[in-house]
Amino acid sequence: EDKVVQSPLSLVVHEGDTVTLNCSYEVTNFRSLLWYKQEKKAPTFLFMLTSSGIEKKSGRLSSILDKKELSSILNITATQTGDSAIYLCAVEGGTSYGKLTFGQGTILTVHP
Amino acid sequence: NAGVTQTPKFRVLKTGQSMTLLCAQDMNHEYMYWYRQDPGMGLRLIHYSVGEGTTAKGEVPDGYNVSRLKKQNFLLGLESAAPSQTSVYFCASSRGGTQYFGPGTRLLVL
Image (cartoon, rainbow over all chains, first blue to last red; front, side, top):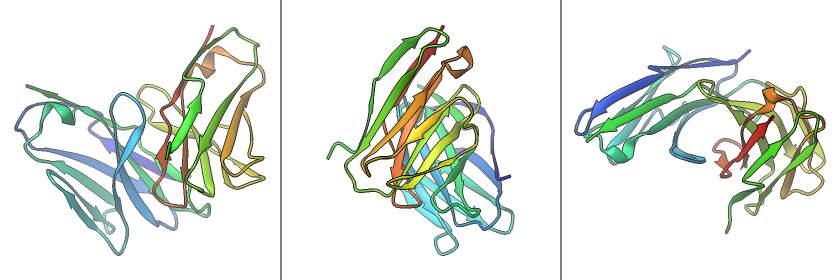
């Protein structure tokens, strides 16, 4: 059974801090790892990492895939209150193409 | 483009009642999914579909049925609702890989 574990489960920081969120996975036939941000409603896509694209960056957010350690990190620098959200990690693999297995999520709270 | 839409947004049911949640997408995606989200448990896959007329079970399929009669629609049915089905339900669609989510349906079963 595919498994995705995120840590920490929750994190409270102040504006300007840098945070690192972790995601580890066990999946057969790994194809990709995705990060999503969920504020009040639907998760919105942040990054997709694959064997051919192990590092992504967009503004203050960046993510790295470590295929040897079966894990990924999501870094947010100079955090803002608008970064407060649940961050979800998901992995695509196994025999069912297109099917994602999600972790529990990390709740990030950024105080002014 | 509306993307992925879900109806209704919120519903209260009594135990034993039935209902259908509708998901629609206008992106011509082959794959569609139904998830439920409960506190501390992330998103858990209920059922999914890899194309019109096909469906498959996900991680937590018991108590739910689905149908994909048209490519753009994916219906989730609860035949006899139970309090354990109180949750937020999300629909998503994709071509494979990145999934795009609807706004969610909040369901309360009393």
